[in-house]
Image 1 (cartoon, one colour):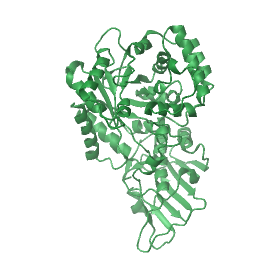
Image 2 (cartoon, one colour):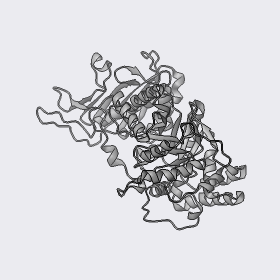
Image 3 (tube, one colour):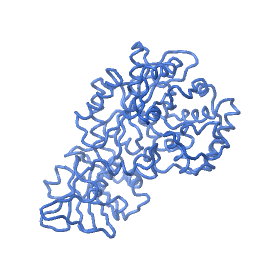
Image 4 (cartoon, one colour):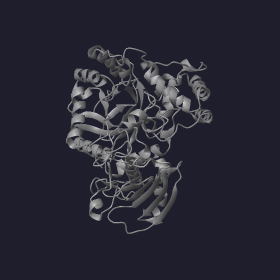
Length: 515
C-alpha cells in the first residue's frame, strides 16, 4: 500500500482497487500548465518544496497528466525525496492522439510516464481518448492492463469516459479502478447513470471541477458577472456556468451553499466539496494546487469536520431547479458541442484527428464509394461495411467485431450496441456523412429480452436525430453477438463524388487507419 501516514487532522482516505490508498482530497496539478503557458518552466526543486508542504499536511496524493506542463517532472522530484514506504501518491494520465495502439506505442507512452516520474511503477495511470468512433482505445486499454499485470502500473483508470463507454470497457474484461470526471454542484451529470454503474462494478470516481475553478467560493457571492477572464481554469468553468443557465442561476446555487456554510461554520468550498464526496461512487475530489499561490490547506480540512443534513440537501435541490443540466454525458464537453474546455471550441482539434477508415471508389462503378473495416467477413462474403451511391449511404449489418474477428463485450447487448454505433459512425464519416444524416436503422436481437438496454444505447446516439427504426428479435445470430445493426444515411444536396482518372480521392475529411 502506498501513501497514507496516520496523522491526526489530515484528510480522510479512500482505498482503490488493488489496495492503493489515496487522500480523499487530491491535489490537482493542471494549473502548472497555466503557470507555464508563457514558456517559463517552474524550477522543479522549488516547486517540489511546495508540493512537499501539501504532503506533510496529509494532502499526499497528486494528480497530473502528460500535458500538464512540467507537472510530472516536479512530482518526480518530490517522489525522489521520500522514503518508499511513506512516499506521496502520484496519479497521472496518458492522453495520446487516436491512432494505432500497438503494444510498442502503448509501452512507449507508459515508459515516458515512468521516466518523468522517476519511478518503477505508476501508482494510478489514467487513460483519455478523444473520439470513441476510433476503436483503438480498446487496444490501448487492454495493453495497459497487461502492463498493469507486468507491474509497471499499480492501478488502471480512465478519464472523461461516459457511462456507455465505461460499460463497454468493463464488459470487455478490462480491470478499471477509477474514472475521473467533472462533478460539482453545477455539473451533476456524474450523479446519474455513471454513478449507478460505478457502484455496481466497483469503479470509483475521481471528481474534478468540484469548485468550478474557484467560482464556488464566498468571493463570487453577489458579485457581478466577470468579463475578460485570462486564467485557463476559470475560463473553462465560466463556460459551464453559461450553459447551466447563466450567472443568475449560478448565484442561486452559490447563495444556497453560502447559507449552508454559515449554518455549519465552514466555507462555501467546504460545502461544495462535501456534497460531491458524499456520493457513494466518489473516492476523492481533486482540488487545484497552484504552486506557491492561494494555498488553502487549513480551510480544505474543514470538509471533514461537518455533515450535510436533510435540510441542507433539500436547500441545494431547490437551488438546482434554477439551473439547466450540463448537456450530454460526462466527457462529452471534450468531444462535441458545446465544447466546455479550457481551450474553448475544440472542433478544429477533433476535425484534425487521424481518420479511422478509408473510402475507396468502386472499380467500374462511377459515383460509388465503399468502406471496409478490416473484418474477415467482408472480403470472404464479398460485401462492404458501407457503400455510398451519390448522396445515399447504406451501412451493412454491423456487429461488435473488433479488428478482424474479436467479439467485443460478449454477453452484454447494451455495450455491444454502443460499440456498433461507434463503428457505424466511423464508416459514415469516411463517406462524408454524419450521424445526423442517418434516416433509418434496423436492429436484430439474439434475445428479445435485451430490447430495453439496446434501445437505451440507441437512444443515447439518436435521441435528437430520431431516424426511422425497426427492431426484431431475430435469434440465431452467429457466435457471441447479441445484436446486429444496419443503417442508412441520406446526404441532402450532396455534391457528387468525383476523382481524376487514375486517382482515388477519399470522400469527406476522414480516411485510413485501423479498425
